[in-house]
Image 1 (cartoon, one colour):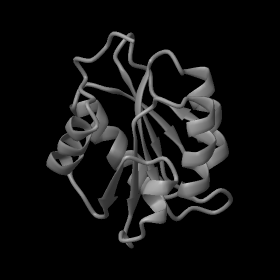
Image 2 (tube, rainbow, N blue to C red; image 1 turned 30 degrees about the vertical axis):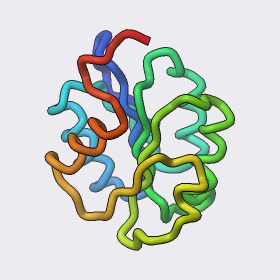
Image 3 (spheres, helix red, strand yellow; image 1 turned 180 degrees about the horizontal axis):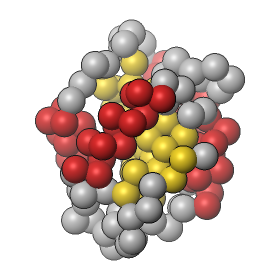
Length: 132
């Protein structure tokens, strides 16, 4: 599991099976003032969610991953931490079932810094929202 140190900053969980995408998302999250917690699959994401539940502000989860899909990952995280804001990402956005998974927002890949910042704002999450 790849965790990046961030000394007290609000945390953002980033889940994607593609290492290059994880690295880009982590860099974007860090730029926005978050500590990036990265997971390559749903099981790692759930472990990080439980471990960091008090500092975690939101999750950005890829829909298409081996093992648990993004939808399944959302459902597991939703059971562990019901109030966590979740955005689901995919190159194939369009199905309502994704919102039924517990994700509040769908992001179509590829996306950049402005789109991620706007999505987090729409979820009510900023790096300034450090109080749990």
